[in-house]
Length: 502
Image (cartoon, rainbow, N blue to C red; front, top):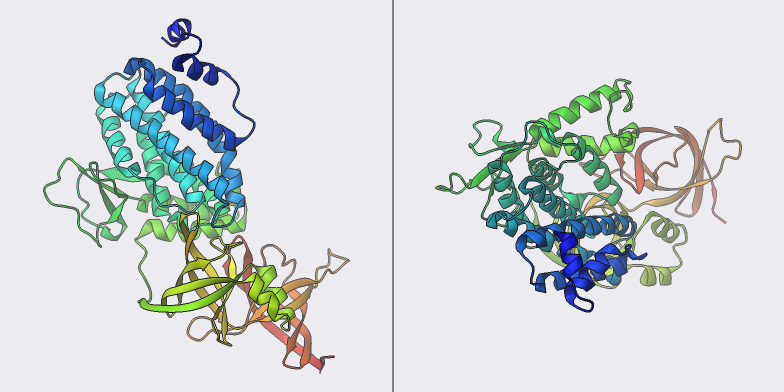
């Protein structure tokens, strides 16, 4: 069919331009490729071809769009929020292309003109899932119409006769839908890009454990969510909002509890000494940081997260300094007040709770902001400041960022540590932040280090206390918190000497 279109296409017309472009190699720049994809897909929409031929051509667009997405994802992951405008426009354009492709595939299924309906449904769901992943990487909300299309595709996939034995390379739309549900319930705004990729890899391998059914559940209701195939909305907690009455045949119920149980078994085996390779698990699970991340995801999948503290509205102007290096430099050289004004950004606190705050960017660039980043927050005109960790971040527009932060301490001290590591003859000094205990949350002193810099549990630590320099031996014990940016340990100080600070 496509060969016939190529043969009949006239030089200079839209069909010839589209087909020639699809036959040419992709552009070297992903930014150029996204623009060309959108432009040529618009030309395809205007071409007077049958729907059956259009679906065949869509398959080629589908492959080009996925290739472009794979090239764009690392660049998005490397950016802080808000993502640089030109890169964000490219990602938004590619998301729009994915959704246009998925919608056209769905129209072909409804009109019963798709040459291979099962494959068309699978390709469409791939587009939906990839659009969701791209949006998650730059903190945007779900693409408009995404859940409505995904829910309708699932219903079509369930109505179609699927071969008992799938052909090699075939795409299962329902399996992809399970991945979409599991990713959504992992709450991507709470994940740094590296964590998102780790979660997505595990979900891709074990999404078959996600349960989807048409009958309402009768137990473990805190792990169940519902969706409506005619409503553009993601999974809704069943305990928070009951499913609508009279929607039998349109309501789906989903749960990741079984996925959480499978993950728990894998993590227990790994912690018992088994290797990820022996268990045929994703290689990322060989890393302790990935296992800690997935342990937290396990609890989200087992039961709907519940808010521990009530929130109260509170509007206050604050300034935020983002990133370990910037915070350490400020605390080490406090007299550089000008550095604070130039390096920090202006935010508005919109609500708070005993555990943290919700903020929105007032102006300026947020810099290194991503979930897991350490931040220093101080009210405008206030002498009091706090060390926090970013728990979630969203960016609905290129000039708009919202973040939720968890309080780690009131104040901190810049410190320098030297680890007693027998394998390190150089004994290189390492920057650290010494955090005082936090009432009702952390009863011990903490030491915050860049991820992976702790090479031993024993060390010498030096920091300024008032007008004196304090030097002593210390030991790291429990790891309280680990993110992609830092490790927070419980610190046991074994003895110290003081000298005048000169």
